[in-house]
Image (cartoon, rainbow, N blue to C red):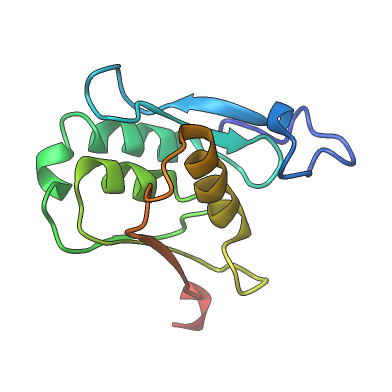
Length: 137
C-alpha cells in the first residue's frame, strides 16, 4: 500500500501539528466541492485500494452512491472511501473496522482536521464509524 508510516518517527503522532498532515487527491478539480482531503502521516495506513476506490466513487462510480441512503465500508482504517461517498452525495456513510481501542481515532482526527482546514464544520456530518469484528463470525 501507500505507506504513510515510512517517514514517521517517535513524536510524529501529534494530531494538531499541521506539518504532519498531507493532502490526498480524491478527484480532479471541479468534480466535487472538496477534491482533496488531508490525512495524517502517522495515524493509520492509507492503502492504495482505499485511494483507488475513493477516486472511483467520485468519478465513474458516483452514480452508484449519489443519493443512496446508506454506504457501509468494511475494513475502513482511515475511512477514505467513506469520506468520498459522503462527498459523492450518499445519505449516510458508516466506516467499519476492528478499531481495537473501541474508537476510530484516525477517522475522527481526519474528519476534525479537514473541518478546520476547510472552515466547514458541517463537512462529513453523515460519516460515522462502527466497530466490526469479522473474526467473530
